[in-house]
Length: 326
Ligand code: UT7
Image (tube, rainbow, N blue to C red; front, side, top):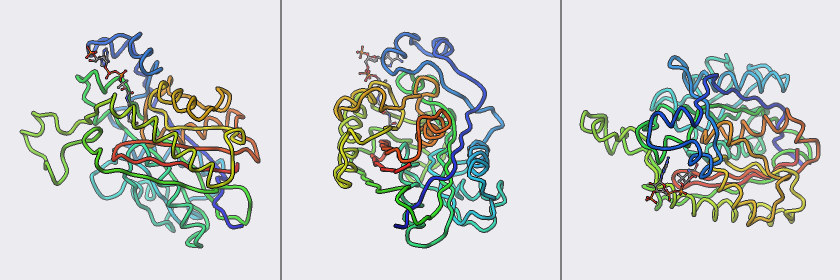
């Protein structure tokens, strides 16, 4: 059976650590509140001269090295991001140029925190359809540039980072088994960036109203996230005649430890089945899942034949799951 298989993983996190104690000095909050409500202890912040394309390029170089694949061999680059270097063109094109992946075509996917699973699904479908042999799939964000560092409801949650995988079309039982993508645009204003798109083009008034920053109604997002992550995970298992016991590792989008634990409880997954690194990086949106895959694999938590379940949820709303035979 022709499937897209992950043959290399990589990630890159900026060096600067912003701990909860640092955020205590910026807004009216406490380290204990942040940890108790989110499970987050610290997050990474990109340097002033670092771009999303720089983080993505470093993660991609590590994934290519791990796969033993040269940039020229890549046919397709798909990148999940909502914090690209420019509104357009796609940051994936900048990464393509950085890597000198001159035979690839490249585009971004805008699906917020679901960006990586959407990108993975898209690239996997292209490879299965025979439109290329090797693809680079990236999730990369510099969320610190769209966070309002005076808003305690949001600034405690987010961080910067990038992860990448190399996919290869192979005649194999291993690889991406299925993808289940969902969205519901009626929830737009629970989680979004109001400016500066076509609705609110850049203006002094928009700056004064802080429209260029992420806005979120966290507790409403929380409830829909738990329900959607649970349902879309169950859908992936049912579609493939698998049970929760068959899952070797569950890597959910890392937004908030309480969301992850509530989802795992509903799915009846054990602690050992769940990968969590939100305490170290916070929510890095499209980057959380590829960073987690890379850490899980390099840490020996993913072995040949394992069944890996990914599930993501984010602005849009968008959500999705991917089932992978490692
Ligand atoms: O990636 C997908 C997108 N994002 C998410 O999945 C995030 C989803 N939401 C969350 O993670 C949580 O809703 C938060 C961590 C953002 C907030 O936790 P919560 O338990 O839902 O708190 P809440 O928003 O219901 O607020 C409870 C109280 C409020 O005070 P009152 O009205 O009860 O007096 C807030 O004003 O906590 C207050 N509060 C804070 N207090 C100290 C909100 N933020 C803070 C803060 N420090 N940083």
